[in-house]
Length: 293
Image 1 (cartoon, one colour):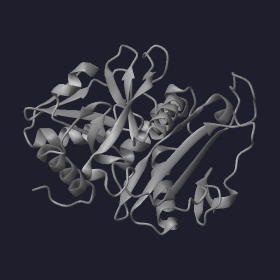
Image 2: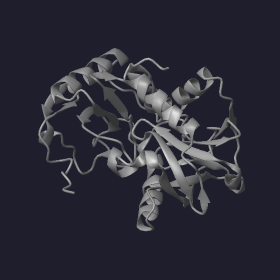
Image 3: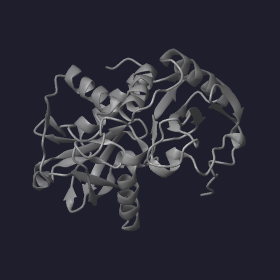
């Protein structure tokens, strides 16, 4: 499959308040966000021209920036309008939306109190993250890297630096023939996949890790709401890896992943059962504004 580089595409990107040519959306090599990871972002999806839970994502973007100690130089309403402007300019009704904010290049050291804060928004088509056959169940490795303790990293922010170990873990998994990796936390509990939250099913009930050291995803909360609407018990708790053999089903969820069944995690196997399929259907109906039967 031909890979189209992200720096060489047609279209427009919203960059510091205006739409510019996609190929002109450039930053300096000595940008603080590149060297010191002082960058926050969001991943969103538009369905039929409407960005799902757009304002929640924008509010989280602003909160992430606040946690990292900088202020986005626009209002939430201005970013909301900019996302819609960029989506319309893209010509796509179904697309991925990526707002990002970062410290610029005025200062190049750990301290960067006077750096300008830049904001950009890009939109592009992105089908199912795990491919068209993902509903058959994807295969996960068990990552060597662990989610850090909450007193060592700002886990409530969707910050670029927190994804370094995700890239390492996913690359290692792909090298072994897996699609993705499940990560444990600093205590050895099950945490999440590299870019999605994880759920398990046993005896008609759903179990999911407590998000006390990793991001409590917007899609995660949406899925929990869908499950509760169907009167399916949901327990948020610490889950040990040795419990995996006792679960019948497993699935991931996230903006990019949507709802993706899991067939294997290392040596552990799961079925793509009726509950997982129902959650995937309900989520698809919700984001596409169809009635949930």
